Length: 462
Image (cartoon, rainbow, N blue to C red; front, side):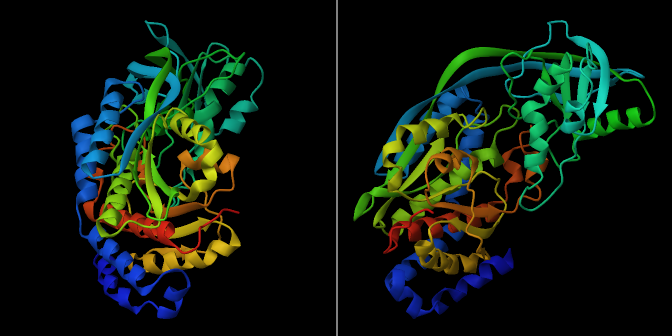
């Protein structure tokens, strides 16, 4: 981290010829001032500590979720945002009450697992059945009709570790639809290796889905060391029988709220840069990495900007509701604002933990690239590399935006090498966040947001 901050002294070396195009020397000096303030401030840490300590886990629809909505409004107001408001979002209201499991044969051993989101319950007494082993979802799909009748399906797909988390997509397919495919073959329950790179004995939850016309069966994820244990038993030729007891509840439609704070622009207040994260979390941990960090650093970034100047365009921080259960807050937000989405001049979401931002990427029209390059130059002192592909996908809550418009999307790529060690587990707690790295994230978002909001040219999408 010493190298990261030592380069800040290079700020004054930016070419004045570039400034003349989109940003004046005074604007660049203000950007440097914001960056310096953010990199030396513990504001984002204070916000994150408050959220994870005073509120804790925030499963949509729970009392803590309601408290988080109140907390966020109070935080925005305390930080001096010009406007603070909430917008409703409905979602499938689901609760986890109890989960336990054990291997029965060839010997009795506890299994550490968790119900996947939206899973149905087992009978009150649980179920006990033989387990059928598969390496991949495709292998399960290819199994003969009726071959899993009265049995438990288990997929042991291993997620790879990578800085950009590229192993998540292939692994999460089994979480999304594994229970459906298992039920089609007659299975009475479904287990999978956690979508995780961890060696710790924590099971990783996450959203799962059912299909109309297919029997709903309990869906679970097994801690990786326990998945390895099951795999060894099968490798050694043992017949494996497992007992499961999962108790959950479908409570129908629930309502939560997107919480929004905005600093108004001085010249084009109707236009805005959208940054933020999702306010909800799974119930196992305190949601420090997913996505308390994103909430805290974007709120703090906006505040640091406002302390130096108000840009030409507004800075809007959106804390989305019910992301974990299916992007419900994001769907509601972009549906509600669908007639004015052209007012978004840049959008970026922080929802990938709190490790350092290592790359900056856009997805904008060609005529906006000069602005992007100037932003990249001001991110360079934070050791953020400019990724020139111009194909940024943004965070998950921006998916509804990308699917309906050609809005300008940005990604501030975070190092995700270790993110899936903690993702969706009881181990997602505040101690996993490095305050210095959180400061770097905050500074990167502050620089990007300020410049996108204050550029001479309005950034447009492809």
